[in-house]
Image: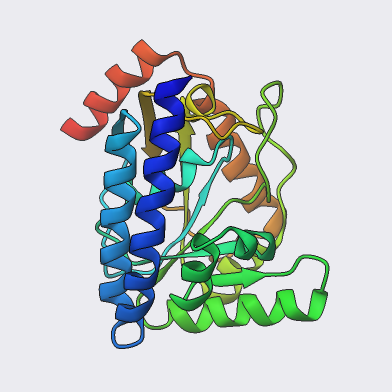
Length: 245
């Protein structure tokens, strides 16, 4: 308990220092600001004792925009996905409630991420339009299609449709991502992180051309359900095999 509290205190202090710095850099160069925020990500994972294992099922071009979609069980998912995709410029589609998190919300608002108010349809449409404009410049978008964290007894929550509509509107591929092990280290409702292993599996791009929305939802859901419950030893072996391809 004491160690977890010390980790939380460090993460909070680190965020207080890094958030204004990242925002200041973003005033001149948003891409450099994002790369600086990855330092915050990696330091926090290291301090919390999280060991990240990532694998990709296909080669991805960091200069090509993708709509990344991941399952969501823990606050650690944000750090794990950002680190696993560290060669990409990612902008997150984030719910407006995150703006209320001290310092983190301030940085989120001022560094080019896409804030969405799900209670305001007009604003939500405008946010997705902003995402489309960013993708036109080579930036990828990261979305949790469940919209919030699933509970321990839930494999996946029903998907929101906005991210799929964005992919169809832009024509850029969807890349499904599965994060495993994060809920055991920082479960929903807890603010006390534990150390351990997190696996991130990045799937192959799904071409959206000529595919309707419901079929895309089915394909992404099928990928996540297939991989999210794989036991740790088996998924590590699969990760090694994927990296060797």
